Image (cartoon, rainbow, N blue to C red; front, side, top):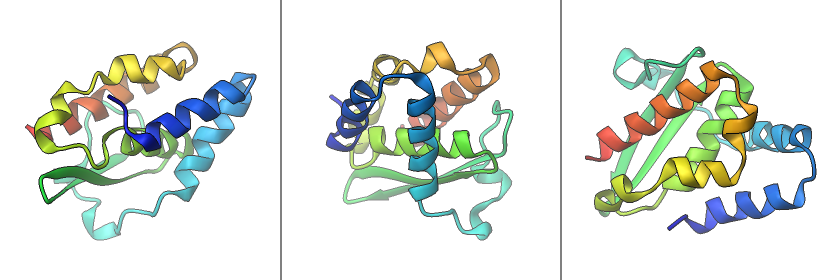
Length: 133
């Protein structure tokens, strides 16, 4: 049930041979993402449970879920970009049905992220799910 944008990331990950290349790709995805305006970097949008500063601002248009996000850590910004690819454009009522753990496992992220980063990623997914609900 992954979006075409997430499938593109998964295809790229299959093409990249080692984790260092994948890690760099995640960082590049984060660099390509537009920054979140500072006016939205407020406690209401801050994600608790992340080692880094993370903000996710939900945007729902035409019944479809989207969000803007940012972080002070480049790899986390890249993870936000991956989650954006996974959830952007999904009908709001379908967000909870996205099996983020399974989709992210396809990328092998769980095997290569620190425990803190993995916890932060789970916290971001939980925030997205709660917001869409």
